[in-house]
Amino acid sequence: MCGIVGYVGRAEAAPILLDGLRRLEYRGYDSAGVAIVDGDHVETRKCAGRIAGLSKLMAEHPAPGTYGISHTRWATHGKPTDQNAHPHFDESGKLALVHNGVIENYQQIKDALLQEGPHHFTSETDTEVLAHLVGKIYDDSAVGVVDPRRHKALLVEALRTALQQVIGTYGIALVHADIPDFIVGARRGSPLVLGVGKDENFLASDVSAIVAHTRDAVYLNDFDLVAVERDKFEISSLAGERGSHAISKVEFTAEDIKKGDYPHYMLKEIFEQPGSVRDAMRGRLSVEECTAKLGGLNMTPAQLRDVGRVVLTGCGTALHAGMVGEYLIEQLAHIPVEVEYASEFRHRNTPMTTDTLVFAISQSGETADTLGALRESKRKGHRTLGICNNVASTIARESDGGVYMHAGPEIGVAATKSFTSQVVILTLIGLLLGRMRHLSTAEGSSIIAALESLPEKIEQILKMSDQIKEVAKKYVKATGMLFFGRQFNFPIALEAALKLKEITYLYAEGHPSAELKHGVIALVKPELPSVFIAPDDAVFSKNMNNIEQVRARKGPIIAVTTASGAAKLKGIADDIITVPDADDIVMPVLTVIPLQLFAYHLAVALGRDVDKPRNLAKSVTVE
Image 1 (tube, helix red, strand yellow):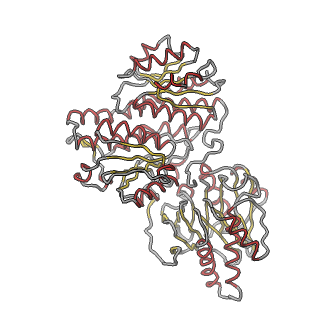
Image 2 (cartoon, rainbow, N blue to C red):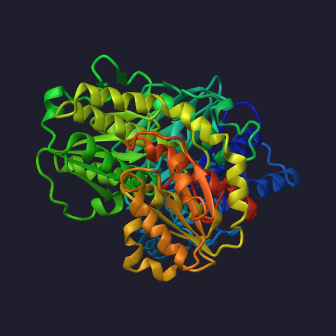
């Protein structure tokens, strides 16, 4: 959450900072601001609202200069106002700072500063307190120092000293009016990447902000500090030790993060799923051995064979993918699986046997709670693997191994293609573990065939987008929706409800179909449609019984089913969305896609801002 962009070079900073903020707006859009050093003073422009408002402000009041920092905010401390927008200044007005994360002990620091001397705070934020702390430490140490090179070192040291007093998480960038062409950054628990250019360098919370200018990046580790100049940079630790960091090549280009001809990123990413699902499987299926090949797990066959229990942990959409994975791995490998909310896992004493294998699932690889769960699992000595979409992310770097999703950039706040990629990868894990135990070659071959057929079947569903759009339009006056599914498709009911909540703001709940009669049926009424995910499978007749119960109480029914199921539901369901026939194992990948489209089209019909839904941001890097 929140986005940072910094630039130091020879070009005008303002256009580069604004362009970077636009690319990061999916990380937060409550307010935005820039601080650009012009001569011996800092020019700042900031306002509540979207980046467009900041762009207009800067067009009316330009801010010249060739280095500066900028920020787009998702509010934690303080309301989304002009005053609370970043950057924030120290008491001298010469140091400007932007910050992602949460300073948990900011009130104690603020109280101490007020006791020590005059400090005037103009915002409600924890960030302004940090700016005052760093500024005070720097001012105290810089008295009488003339050498400009020494001032650079003192500013870095001031930030280091301040952060040693801080409890919380942070991604930070700061500038000082007295120290030209110099930016200092730091991270702990909130991502920060250094972009390396020719006679220019960048800082950003996400490489998507700077990939149009450079594809050479250094991904900072927790407790790293970086001093950035036009033609060089230096990285050190919070303890003051210098370290070397490899320069990585960013795998995607600026073109990959454009919407193209699509009206929204979410729709573009839904339509990218034939490719993203194909890429999740690419090179990982062994037709000869009828199994999956996942070398990134960094485990020998003997170690995999000894796994006696699996724990899957994540948040939101990743958690729902894990719930599908629970059904898949237990079905295919007969290994007990538990799915844990990452936020709960890290704070409770979960009994863990020595043969437990833990998977942390996160699209960004930076989700704070999931990262915390990973660290807790490793602290207890368990092998902990990651499933994520960013090979340079913290989860990817701190895990013992894992599987990279290859889904490409996902800009839409509501996750779509990352979910189906995660489910496919969990299917591969189930296949691999199953073939080591009891699955026959024939069964393994059948699963591989089902997986390989997915991209084509997804394309068939995407051709139904206009039909699904017409169904969605019928429900613009609905007060909410209930979603029901059984077995593999119960987590799809949860994920479909989450998508609807995220982008339409309608009330929505997901339930196992059989739970209808255990209380949920009290909600059924003509204004509250029920969506049943009911392919013609072994539990279809059970779903039919629940559908009839809703119909008897005049609840509108939308059914997602296969062709044979559609024939049986004709005249019973009000609307039917048909997906291709497929093996039960891969059906969740197919049933979720029409529901992604349904949520999207309903949100558009309701006039919602699909890519920037209310109160949400893409990468949740705060607790």
